[in-house]
Length: 86
Ligand SMILES: [Zn+2]
Ligand SMILES: [Zn+2]
Image 1 (cartoon, rainbow, N blue to C red):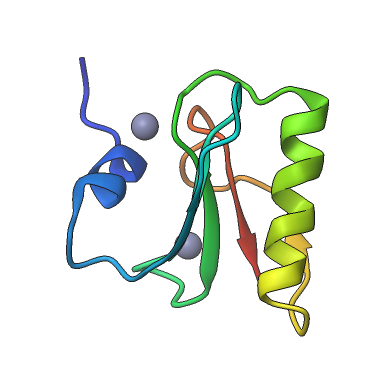
Image 2: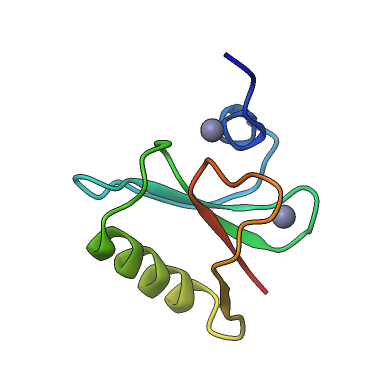
């Protein structure tokens, strides 16, 4: 199986971790994206998050970064659910 850049980020202790949110079904973390230098929400699993999971992640992200907005487009890594805050 090919390495996944986002899984690497989650395993990289040098990545700035803003918070880890262990929701029952859709755990996610907020880290700094090391290519865009903006905060990024990354779901811990490759499964698509539930609608509630996604909603919760957006809520938490906007609470943490009220001056940014959620960018739901996935450009480089479409198969690992995540979104940037720009
Ligand atoms: Zn991954
Ligand atoms: Zn990025």
